Length: 210
Image (cartoon, rainbow, N blue to C red; front, side, top):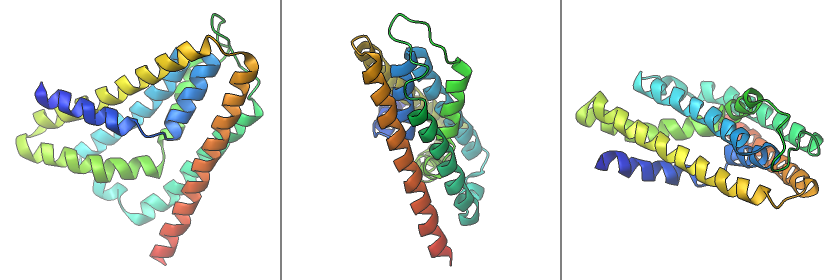
């Protein structure tokens, strides 16, 4: 249990920095409520879980190859640009104030979480930082400890998502449509910025290869 709770805290620390998933999750939380914001977080955690399984099966070496990561930068940037455009274009649409029924489906916001999480930044992080932690735990006491560490980190990320969305839900009660609209526009600009960063990383890695 001490090992589990230690990695719950690490999971919280991992989730704290503001990234593309946090931005999309906050936007959906303001526009459509707690469950839709959480759907984005669950989409992100689905990719995290898939990467844990990949690391467990030894796929990390394949994913860390430069010619595999290069196209992923472009794919990730494309997804973020699409989400950014949609966030700005439809900033005043699909807004459900507190107490109103959301017009957007749970599945569509879950899909957004999947798209944002499929990015090289996320892959590289799990392969390098998290992969090293899991590899160490696996070599130490086998699969049992590996699973405890993985479960602890995922639990920490889940706690962060619930805490963030609780704050968003409470703030949403005092916000009007105009305020939520501008929240969506700001989120779109931030997502576009993350997309530009991915393009920069693609060019940087391409130059390194050449």
